[in-house]
Image 1 (cartoon, rainbow, N blue to C red):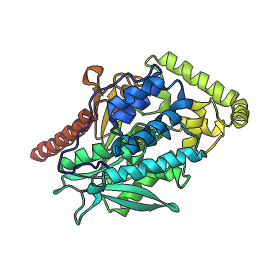
Image 2 (image 1 turned 180 degrees about the vertical axis):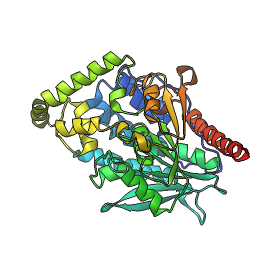
Image 3 (image 1 turned 90 degrees about the vertical axis):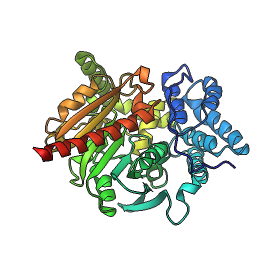
Image 4 (image 1 turned 60 degrees about the vertical axis):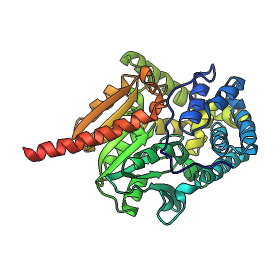
Length: 398
């Protein structure tokens, strides 16, 4: 069985691929390659065979079985993890795939966690009756502390390579799964919460961290600045996606954006009762959008879904957003319109500083969470941190 060679520096893949005619499926398969580290040739082979999200599990699971039989732990782990993506939270096959993915992930990266001075450690942090799995990456000499988390459908496997890259550049990194993510959802049944300051403060207090650089990816681009408004241990914050408010994200044109919000309200509130009945009758089959959202929220109630979605909004805490902020957006983000970057900036009216970086198609990282060029995104963070150090030195001279 293959294992990662820790004597070699981590490599972050570059490039987006058209892996399916359906843009949503193609993006998830790019996550498989760029975040989970699956061989792109494997994704190219299976991509065209997936006709709809209902086939996602069987196609990826079957290929995962094949890769495992051939001893390809990295590919197998990535495929099992993504096979779980569109399954119901009560589906035993989805849970089994998730467990297998995590098992193989730790087998592949086992040498990171071994020895008297391991490069990485898995620590379970107590939180509201269960524990949040947290990976700590240990550099030889630390330049500072980064706490990283994902968003709506994240697990720590996806961000492992990025965190190792940051460790190699001298930062102590804490990567955790919170409510609604990974083990917290799959094993403990803990749904997503808007009040993300609660899990963040549990992490910063447990490890007694100070001068924390908080990095949130995807919906974590909302969660992280939200948490920074309440946790004084956080002094710098990175949003790797433009989520100042979900209501700002649908269209560049303000009128169109408002129309989309109105239509969603009609669907979620006006026809919510009907959606709930149909979902129950069909057990979610053929209703991928609702199945995915209900999964993460631990509910089958459309009204609760609507309440959660419209609570994704930094404006109510805008006065408390006083730290240094970096927003990394993509010019072709499938989850947020381009104008959302500027709208996010406007919310940060009381910030100490605001820096934005839009990654473009020519840079291969224009899609959600810089998928296609995580190295550029990580380098952007590192350069931003260096610029803040230079700013501090300049201010001291005045």
